[in-house]
Image (cartoon, rainbow, N blue to C red; front, side):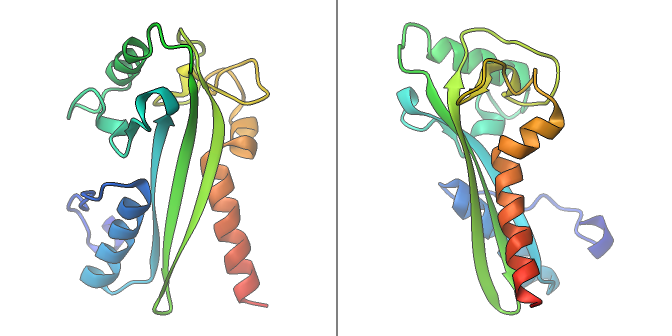
Length: 165
């Protein structure tokens, strides 16, 4: 963003992950004139009606602290048997006057304790379906294969490759 002179915080005021991704891509297109892509990501927990969702980064407050966010989530899930959750990334692409979006989802569950040192955000408490380790315990290569961001990026790349054919 600094390469195009964008040094301000891009608004993220939409009520959905999809809405925020689109808002950010449209902001760059409308204010700087560039085709671009933008993304937004969130963790959606079934037992909490989709929370933290669009507020994932600031779930425990504006300080955006991962430890605080995880602690608040673990506290909210105490005594709740349903720990199903999913990570969702949406990439919005503004290209040649068209807007297209790509959604990557990784289903799993929230663990009862933090495990692992890798990754960031909620990785130490998220275990993908079919895995016994959290995102913070598996390799980055494995996480990118099964994770929400990797899936969304793969869809975007596939779309762009097919445009040129």
